[in-house]
Length: 304
Image 1 (tube, rainbow, N blue to C red):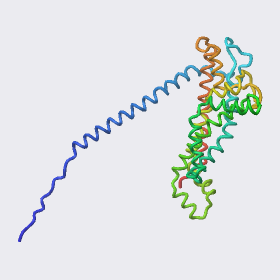
Image 2 (image 1 turned 90 degrees about the vertical axis):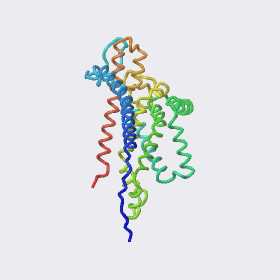
Image 3 (image 1 turned 135 degrees about the horizontal axis):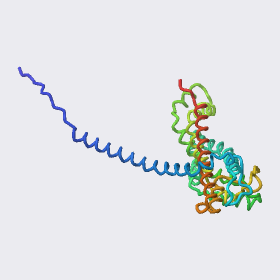
Image 4 (image 1 turned 30 degrees about the horizontal axis):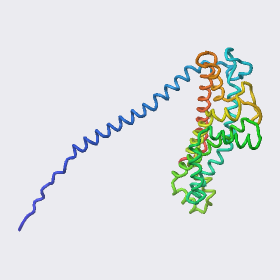
């Protein structure tokens, strides 16, 4: 009769492997942290510079209620009212045109015709528009709207140029947000007999609404700071102009360019106006971002 002894087998140690992995993890963590610091420090520096140099103008009540009508480069005073209203009007018209088109194109590419010939052509054209410089968009609108159709240079022409820059960003962000919506939600809705269009409107879009709104705001922030369309398609006016189809119009980027031409850096008066307009533009974009995020949370699907 033979007996078999169960000899315990000693498990192999992976101490050397563990140490190597810990070292690799620590090195990667340090590199990522340094990369974040390299990205954040310049941004904070720029923000600090703009705030410290521009806050002096923003705390003056007349900065928000007056325009620069009748003001010269050496006469202190005036405000940003005309430029703020001009920027808001141009951005509003651009958003009204761009948002529905961009969202609908994104929905089409994800939910309907992404693999069709029309979908492939649309994707290709969106990729091209994404890399188009703002001055090219401005020249195209000038050649079509002003030179060919005979309309005046105006704030509406600027909005048309900004539409060409805003749509591809909205399309891309909408696509990405719709793609991350779980397919299970769509299938559950289809199983209940809900039509596809209603599934998209009631389930898919509300689920991705927060990301879509973020993409829209990124696109709007990009176009509101563009200068080339302003220089080509509408002249800068120091007076207030509410007419989007006629006459020169003030804007925050246009005001900054005008103050630079007036001697900003050498003359303290246009220098203060330059920094004030820059800080006003930053605050405007920040307010739009915060407001839109609050609206996105308000209309987002409620968690059960």
